[in-house]
Image (tube, rainbow, N blue to C red):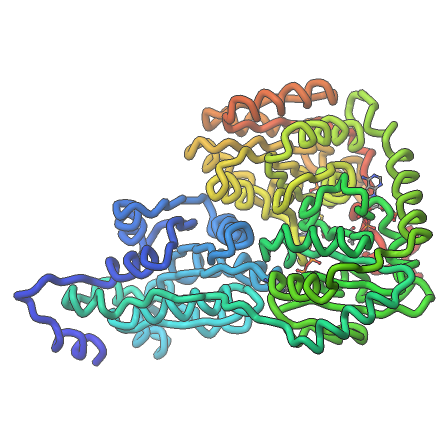
Length: 576
Ligand code: OXT
Ligand code: ADP
Ligand code: MG
């Protein structure tokens, strides 16, 4: 029926176009210049044709990693990152990343080929049969299917707008195989395309909300600003800096907001986290949710003193999600922060000096306590010794993008490695998901051109390690450092049943991850001391050659679950 409708309108004497071309034209018209994916039926030719048309098409070894790349591309660019997958299994592999993008508020579009509707809907056993649209729907912000070539333009327009407007998120776009071969007149095809105008319109906060927020802030004795990755995403860096500095309020960056203002900024309270959460009386959240990472805004972490929250966020339903928000400011961060700045006027009392002094004293104390631990040159290395080398490198090369995942490798690196510039730290995000590392590293290199340093737990790396071939194949300036402690959290676990199988958390002892890079023509280095590590990373960043460094870490150095061991269920029947 659909095909008949299309055929009737085709005049074979005129120039023709087809579904493949229209998909590519729709992307190009909307500035989508990069695709991350894995080829196969029915999208192999789409990848080839997109490449021929000047779109950069990066082929991965597994769709999940391509999806993580698209997700972080969205975070870095404010444009939807596109992941292209084959039907059923490829689609499912990409779906984890789509859900991850949605959870983290990153704009992404998962474009997937799918099997024939008529056969799928009657469950007649088509090649890779699956009702993909139905499966994607609950896991993303929006999901659409295009059945007719003349609707491809509208389909992409809807997907782009849904991904970036309001709270950003993941969108699924289902393209059944038959669509690509549909033919229509080229003129009509060109007219059917849609250029999305003002895809993420400014959302201006109400003047009353701005005044209410400033009244609450003005009355504070111990104010705190928390910057989240939404603030980093918003790219309102100058306005945010101006607000923080004009208010004089200490700020606490969430993990991926580190560097939005330098960790060296005199108002940075990153190294006094417990103190500022507990002792503050007014907290202004900018692009950060009161989820598990902030202990839901209540309990021991937040202390006993009554607290008032101001929350700046584009999503109205985020307000009061965990605790009462005394002053909700709903709008996009750029507009909200500018409105707050305007409302502060020419003279604004800065935060009380006894409070800022106490925060600074705590911060300096914690920094001084930590400093000697970064200086050790032990072999095998402990986390602090190895991180001591890496923190200096990032200080000297602040444009390097740091990718970070693992448990101890993540939690200790977050504190150890100061960040100096916005959107330079990419990590596991809201879900604490392992395996984002290589996709993030690839997209960061591709989207920014800056060198990338990926600091990976050996377990974390295992989720995505085959993409080292992708890094070598595209000759990307990525240096991967695997913190190899022979296992998950620690490498010295023993079989709880006393048998000969290894412990559930232990890996092969003394593995040489560096050999993986060598297998694909990259540089591999085995580093057993912080000095080795420093030398190898500097060399990699200078040469921009794909490099994998196996950093040998003491198997006994880590803690169970890093700094979130408290989240492991504890039964009184099972004393450790
Ligand atoms: O103020 P106080 O005194 O409290 O001190 C704080 C700061 O003020 C201070 N600080 C500093 N001091 C001095 N100087 C400086 N510069 C400084 N900066 C800060 O330090 C402390 C701590 O600061 P921090 O870190 O900011 O604060 P804190 O209290 O830790 O913050 C709380 C949190 C919750 C915000 C923070 O901890 C956080 O963001 N955590 C994220 C944790 C996370 O997401 N973890 C990943 C998941 S763990 C687990 O699930 C893993 N799995 C299972 C699995 C997963 N995840 N995914 C999939 C797909 N499958 C399975 C697995 C398999 S981890 C894992 C693998 C692990 O093994 P690896 O080999 O990869 O890694 P290793 O552990 O290395 O072996
Ligand atoms: P973190 O993990 O760093 O604390 P979260 O992912 O929890 O950050 O929170 C990010 C928040 O930022 C989300 O609530 C999202 O709605 C919001 N957000 C994202 N982009 C914008 C924007 N441009 N303007 C306003 N809010 C935004
Ligand atoms: Mg490990």
